[in-house]
Image (cartoon, rainbow, N blue to C red):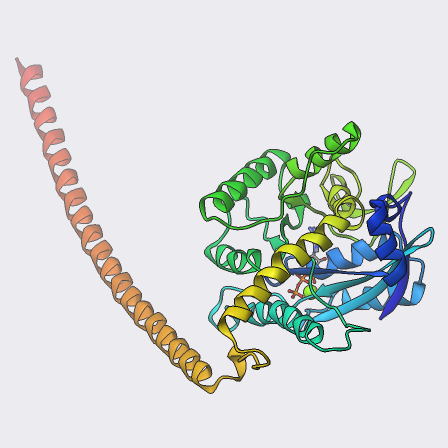
Amino acid sequence: MSATVVLPDGVGIAHLPNQRHKIVSKRGARYTIMVCGESGVGKTTFVNTLFTSGIKDPKALHLRHKKQTEKTVEIDITKAELEEKNFSVKLAVIDTPGFGDYVNNRDSWLPIIEFLDDQHEAYMAQEQQPRRGGIIDMRVHVCLYFVRPNGHTLKPLDIEVMKQLGTRVNLIPVIAKADTLTPQDLAKFKRNILDVIHAQGIQVYSCPIESEDEDVTKTNQQIMDSMPFAVIGSTQDVSVNGRTVKGRQYSWGVAEVENEDHCDFKKLRNLLIRSHMHDLIDTTEENHYENYRQVQMETRKFGEKKVKKYENPKFKEKEEKLRMAFTEQVKKEESRFRQWEAQLVSERDRLNKDLEAQHAQIKAMETELEQLHQMAYRGGARR
Ligand SMILES: Nc1nc2c(ncn2[C@@H]2O[C@H](COP(=O)(O)OP(=O)(O)OP(=O)(O)O)[C@@H](O)[C@H]2O)c(=O)[nH]1
Ligand SMILES: [Mg+2]
């Protein structure tokens, strides 16, 4: 699917340094954004929201609307053309299927990693050809990782996936469904996430902040201070004090997508398609692609094909064995848990019986005491 995106109020492409201008206008830059994260966390809704804020093509919008309520089952690419003055950037947004922490699709993030490597691989293969015109480039320049708004911290699965992503792509953590957390809980959640990212050595994107222009430095600082970006996704028009905005309607009011007091959507969109698009493209080329190329050059002979994990029967066999061992372990743990539960119930019954016996004893002693009181009273009265 392809559409023309007219960016809202003066986009940064025209503000790129001169040298970059030439490259952009000559070849037309390619720019690819990817979203990934757990199932049902709001990735597709976010992509739709991003497209809704600025798209002119009603057909494309209609198609994306149709996808909104569906579970994403395969990698889905939406293409569009970002235009400003004479500059155009070919944008691709890649929506990916969600993964989860239950046994069956716990590992379904692995194909996403493979997809990222495949794009570097395809580019490298084309670069090695003598005629290099018309290279198809689908390398991912930025990956938004959606974190479920549980209010506590990153889960082990998030840590595992983010570690893998961070070494391959510019990774930006995003807190989904910000409207489900109070501002205090959100601030705490952000701090916890940053602490874990730091402690676990997860590589996340950090943009250059300093600029000759003081205002730009200030904006950059504000952008980076908002990481991990909290977003609200919605393509619904709702009305707030006579204004029509994109948002989510609740009995207590409206959570607005583009209101900076409600979430960081605007800042994130700004970073993605304005202020840091250039840097995201550059760092992908200079750091991530270069890393990939070097590792491959060191470990493979020239022209030798890359062995894909999923096509390697040995790997499949090993994976199957691991999965079976894991399922077996889960079963064992479950039966251990059942035994422990049964023990607990019988212990509780025993204690209840003890308690009943003690109650009966207390009751008997109380009756005895009562009788003694009465006898003492009668004796006293007689005297
Ligand atoms: N409260 C709230 N709900 C949201 C938000 N964004 C999405 N949702 C809801 O969350 C549900 C799942 O949204 P999707 O966008 O389909 O999630 P996904 O991550 O693409 O799901 P998979 O494709 O299954 O991995 C839908 O019912 C959305 O309406 C948000 O910002 N706030
Ligand atoms: Mg989806």
